[in-house]
Image (cartoon, rainbow over all chains, first blue to last red; front, side, top):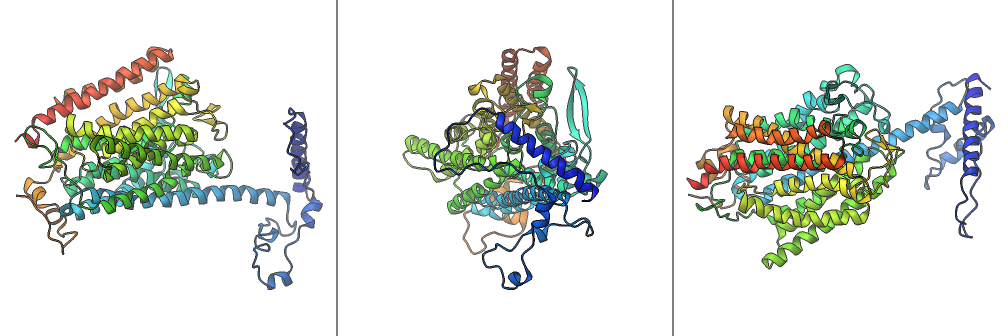
Length: 551
Length: 60
């Protein structure tokens, strides 16, 4: 036996032995059903066991492997030292790499699903606007992907994740270890990260960092595309490009750092005893609310479309040109949401990663109750089941469940979606009739009102059953809301809401005000009346159609 | 008025953050944060939006 094996095998056997003793000391479980097979006793792996494992014979492999039983065997395990042969260390290393590989594959695939949500947003927004602006609306949604990604790669990722520390589910990324902090009330307040620029800075050319970048980048792009909906049909294209770059580089990453990058909101639990700190599983606040409060700032700054309000301030309905696109886009978004929420476990293997199944079911349940609530609201109030509001109710339920999806049970998620479906209808009416902020696609209501509701609902409905590796934001135990006994968690969530409204809105407003002074945010009235496709983009989206312009 | 709206909006957030240092009572913090949120909403909808509504395109 070589020296390494002589150390590893007794240690491994000792661990299994301790586990067996611990099992024997636990209280007796209820009697198992008679049909259940007896539990196998733990046994230590020995060198003889390893020697006894043989790969399939060449003869067997020569016949092919139609049932898959010969593919993926001991012969696929990398042997580090050919002279020593297969060692227990080789086996353990392979197990570790398999765990991380599963988590890489899961997180990357979920990121790819989220990327496809850009198509969903594009067709929802284009369908809800008029045909004369279709090229312009589509092109905003198309280019927000590239503009946002560029800004995030250059600057945003480093600000957001540069101080996050090691992410155990992805094998540890300790190179992301520089968080800029200040001291306030005697505690460290993390403000922004400072490593990872261009994905080359300070050793961040690293496979785990690449996974985190891809997954976080598509989240960021989702936030950016929310603004294009509110400012549609009157936003100057150049201003859109500059505004989106600034948001991808600064506005989004700063709040995301505070919530997900180890910043001060995440440490409200460890520093001030407020539950587990601000908890936002997949981004009702970080993604949807940041996008929506920026959209709100833009909606106020840029003003309503010509014809949206009469001279006495009454709102006119301006129907979109293609409900087919709208509802198809809602389904595309719902499909992408299965990457958004379950993917936020960043794992299937270890640290509670299997909870992804519960997250996925919570997500679909909230979407369902959201659409039911909104269709019923509109049917009762206006006598007809409104298609676009039903779609918005569906999305509202999904937005609202995004933050709590990792922490609540199915009944809680259904209630959260139900409230969201009504809330989106009330919010659209409020912004139309009271605030008079023109939002052609209802983005502020879908993503803002319900994003904030989602953040708050964590502090109410988190049932204390989910455990992602023993702690969340460094606080031992499970995230628990007010209805299950922890009022402090609700306070942490509300501080997140206050930050979104008081800080993120203001930052977005000031930055876009500056862009308005330099570039100008709004197109000329004549271009708006004519439709933006020719004045801004130089080509019609539907050249064969007779379009209805305005005088 | 734009500056006033910005100041009021940020002040609401400032109160919410200050609640962390002012008191250790969860109930008191909850109250202060809710007041902070209300102040920020007044700044956004009551001051900034009202200012822009005065010059709204549909009033011209």
